[in-house]
Amino acid sequence: MIFKVIYKDKKPIMRQSQLFTRTKKEAPSDEVAKNAKLLIRAGFVDKLQAGVYTYLPLGLRVLKKIENIIREEMNTVGGQEILMPSLQPKENWQTTGRWDTMDDLYKITDTSGRENALGPTHEEIVVPLAKQFISSYRDLPFSTYQFQNKFRMELRAKSGILRGREFIMKDMYSFHRDEADMVAFYEKMKAVYTRVFERVGIGATTFLTYASGGSFSKYSHEFQTITSAGEDFIYICDKCHLAVNKEIIEDQGNACPQCQSKDLRTETSVEVGNIFELKTKYSAPFNLSYKDEEGKDQTVVMGCYGIGLGRVLGTVVEVYGDDNGLVWPAEIAPFSVHLVELGNKDDKTVREEAQKLYDELTRDGVEVLWDDRELRPGEKFAESDLIGIPLRVVVSAKTLAAGTFEIKNRATGEVFMVERAVLLEQCNQCKVK
Ligand code: ATP
Ligand code: MG
Image (cartoon, rainbow, N blue to C red; front, top):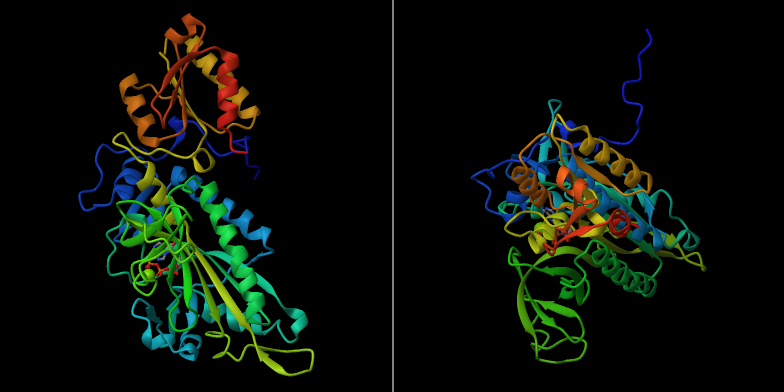
């Protein structure tokens, strides 16, 4: 049997009339977090149960853009991407002792009686994996990362996608011959993380934050973004653009760890990422060692580096979302341009003009969501604001008659009437580089 090709275009559907999802008038009454309310109303995510969400076409486009930014940045330090399983044998978790000590671990028993954990993090998997490939000092250093679902029995699942029970994390692990090498890499990762958060659009409100490192090192570092939705509390030194979290500020003598200033302001914040010097915490229990130049066995030294993708997405919504809906920074917007056609069945000229513009912009590599539906203008504009694409372009009988187009900047709310050449230039500026 021969199947006919129905959709010749290999690009995803970008016409709103074809989207199977829709916006909603109301957010579910059990959602309290702004990020979840807006994302659900705008049709970006759907809630399955507390802390568990589906990413719908628009939401997944944003998530994938965040993922790609992180991937590019991890690759700059030589990170090698892998994908490890969620279903993890109990024995691995017993080796580190975390089977019994981790409160938020999901444990499952199958019908054969075998016990597994649903991975909340992957040290228990990546260390025995690395052990197969490390024997000599020549095999070090390296780093490996993945984008993978994590499962945690979070008690407070009230923050929408900021705190999921199932969520996607980028977790990277680095392996070194000694502490000096690990620390040098760790310092590089601070810069890499700073760049990730700048690129996703929250650089100005995200601070490298000193946190207590537990028993293994003096500090770990978190990246904290200021938002009233945050569950954390940080002390910011604006001069150094860094912060200290609540748990260690007293140890710090209530001063900036860099310039010692006591002129710190306090803010609530959310942890979008963190980096840890693991040292030999996980390599020791698995006997992950290498032979040095003298042939002596040495324990491998590790670091780990996490970023929650949904956490980042939700934080962007908390930071930029307004009374009318979502507001996306250009680099992670689901589309760059929202082409809103105010047509009328009997007048083909508006449709033709919209099609022409859509084709031209798409050819230029601009990502366009085309609202080709027959709805009242007010309804379309309200939806456009809710979805939050950076630039809205209106094509209507009115704009056609005037020989111009109407554009609206979602973030500033400014509306302009512009000629075609200016329009094309503006749309191209919005384009993700
Ligand atoms: P928190 O203190 O917020 O619970 P954590 O210290 O447990 O975070 P890690 O285990 O270090 O976080 O995870 C690394 C990153 O994964 C965090 O910086 C955050 O971005 C993200 N993350 C952690 N827990 C969740 C969650 N429940 N939902 C979404 N993202 C999460
Ligand atoms: Mg946690």
